[in-house]
Image (cartoon, rainbow, N blue to C red; front, top):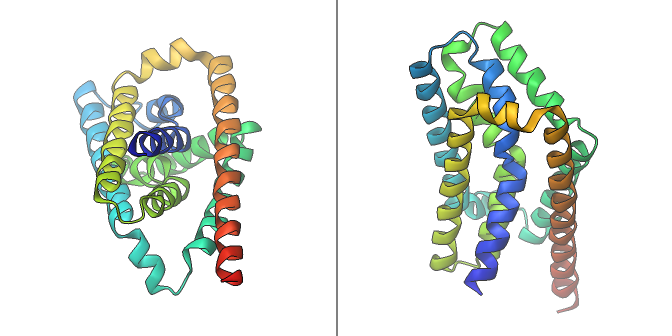
Length: 212
């Protein structure tokens, strides 16, 4: 049912992108910029990430096919990748990696380009988000309604990222360190379950293909 697909797509992308975790990283990257500059950086980063994820949603399956990779194999590999990200979230390693990436970008004097790197790629539309988007697109089985819903979900999640970035100071104060840790670990558990399901689906397809 489209409603089930819509819910799965939203939960998967919201968990993997984790807009709320963007607040402290965005503040670190844009420290020293004025409010107008911060808004420009946030808007540009979200637009770039939206284009990237939408491109993989609509063309990712063809790209994988050109590489000669079967989609069951991609489901298994993608599920394992998402599980590794869930593991990082559970043990509070993902946020530290994002902050290290942000610090490296500032240290290299790339503050003018931070909308594209590292905000849009890889912090918002990173390997995990791209993989999840392609897996969800494969689950649509070429149904244009579901693909349209997936693009709409991407837009909603990106809107969430933009909102968090624009209200980064308030969000960071509201959550605090403890709130971010608790929220990240809860999302990590959900992502781990979704990742296992992707692996199970991939293995099931391989078994059916081998037995037919």
